[in-house]
Image (cartoon, rainbow, N blue to C red; front, side, top):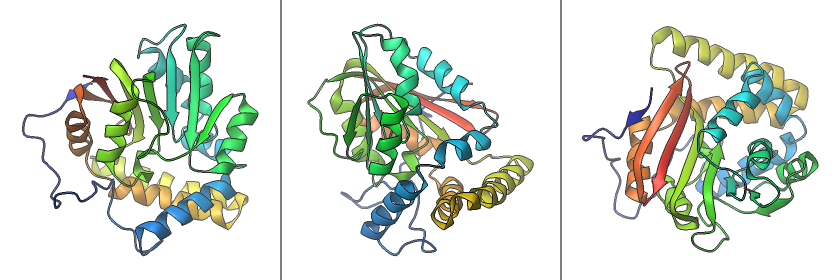
Length: 259
């Protein structure tokens, strides 16, 4: 069910000017923020050719219809301008294209050149190399900004959402799809086994970098800030009525309207 920002949503404890990180430093993988950026980008570059089949296995093959349904719920149509941030292999941007039609735009942005090669092969025509915290687009350029399962990889949630708001026209929509750590004991145990053990085991077929990426993937889910923090950050960035829809106690869709 949709969840609005609680009136007492906890503000993250951080100093003024300090980034609102989606998760703490994960010392198993990196020792500093610059090292994290380099390593994660290299993982995605090396994994690009295997990413789609692994993520399809992760979602039990349901990813395509789920994305299409979430996009349709935003109300975009012919002529709409869509920006997919951290587009990866272009799955979400490609799914938006039939909705925007020939007069609309579906632009993909990603920091991984390897992922953009795959997105182009999928048919996404407008692709840009870049990061979420510094979008290379003028203000009010888009009707919808999306992000699919990549919020855990940004440096600063506040800066990311501020950029989303900047490039959206007033009244434009944001849609962030993410995997959320289940709250129930059994839900968490199953998800930890499936995403934390089984998926990395299967990912070994793609090589060491692919296995490491999906081990990291689970750890970022496990250590991610709670949904209330994400909703509060959306509100602070200038989004009205930020809300979260949850399915299967795992898949979160965060939405908001640009003021």
